[in-house]
Image 1 (cartoon, helix red, strand yellow):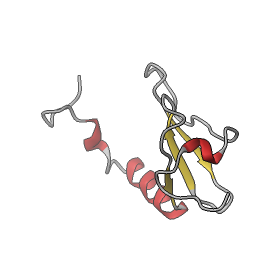
Image 2 (tube, helix red, strand yellow; image 1 turned 90 degrees about the vertical axis):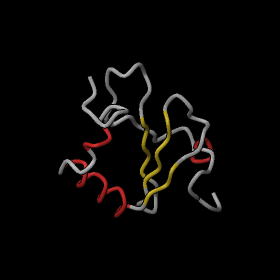
Image 3 (cartoon, helix red, strand yellow; image 1 turned 90 degrees about the horizontal axis):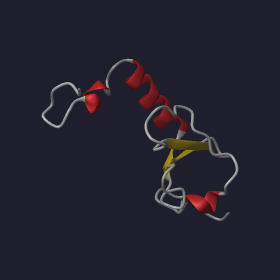
Image 4 (cartoon, helix red, strand yellow; image 1 turned 180 degrees about the horizontal axis):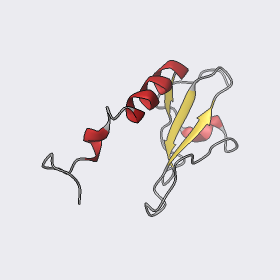
Length: 86
């Protein structure tokens, strides 16, 4: 592959190596990830495996995961009105 870029078709990265590290009871709609040879991480939507892949550096993924573990992404779980989801 010549160039790996953000938004490229996920199928261009191949079909092997994708995993669902945090899949659950969400009706099959999961985020799939793939570690790339250069250390970057690709993400795609499992319900659209031919859609775009988002490409993140190791540092970006590490920062996001550490922040999520520390509660910095909890606001994403709020309902549309900003209150808790029920």
